[in-house]
Length: 457
Image (cartoon, rainbow, N blue to C red; front, side, top):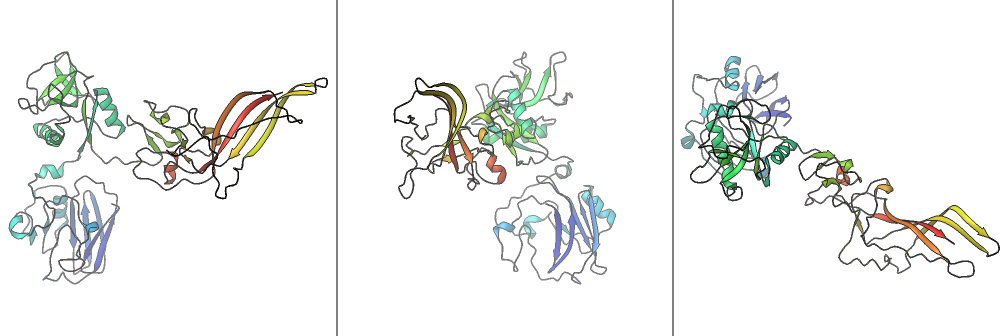
């Protein structure tokens, strides 16, 4: 969200510029004077004022709808214009509030304004008609006014404490550390759907972000080192262990126990802001982010080395037969370009009428049956790895009389030259590639090239 637009009748009254994050409470108050055409928006800690054209008043006889945009009275709704949010403490007054009254409201101070609002939420079930996917529940003012909102995400894979710390850190979060009974209950409520998949033989479910101090038998925050005064231990088994897990069995549901730090449990990460997926990065399997340029560059940059896994530049279809040359539409032979570089002449014998020399042969051809991936502009970084069976031109050498010659191949390497743009993106692919940096998938078309170092006599 980059702006706030308030509309009345057919008039757009104001636009407040700013940057507003998701997954947090927005405290909003809009003041408008129909006489002076002046308006003020209080939006969390920001204030916007101005003047604009607008109606002389808001006419009666209409229909107030929260959560949708009416293209006509009571209808014209579209799914894309629905409000996917939580709305609390909605009020509509028939007078312009003072600046201090508006500030009190957005500052979460108790307000007792007269007269009472024309529209409000206290008598919700009697005065409002509920339609569609709407849930009603009570909220505390403290829930709305907390300075730092947070949310949880479950990673149901089993990890040790150090692995869980690394994963949460890599995705911009941290292990949860409940500092009150209410926060402990929030974690349990979030954890409930995953209990069948995330509890071991002892009933341990997830690791908490705290460690034990052996000297004082207290516990502290694993990142800040601050002592944690809240405790929810039922009894302290595994006293020799240093980590803390939360239990979910019937007898000790929600209580804490010391657990071994190498015990592999599900991981919940706590976030205080939305982590944005960044273009130009590759995600290692352990969650570490590296530059996309390091993907398949023949050097390992991921701690778990996964940036160099599945880096074959060539993908073969099930119907590919490497013994057959690439077919051409008109049935003509496959065109192969040959470049010969004689690097040294070892021996010339006039008696035997023989010559011995070293040379490099470079063959270039196209194979439309192949699909390529992870191609770089520099052909030397696009090797076809050993064991990948692709068609190569066979080489036969003979002298001027048509007799065979002695050939010793000292090395052979096949590369892919990138000559075009990649194909469109496939959303089902989970791994990033260099081509995704350009908004395309990590495969394209190219041409093959084979380099052979040959000694011939």
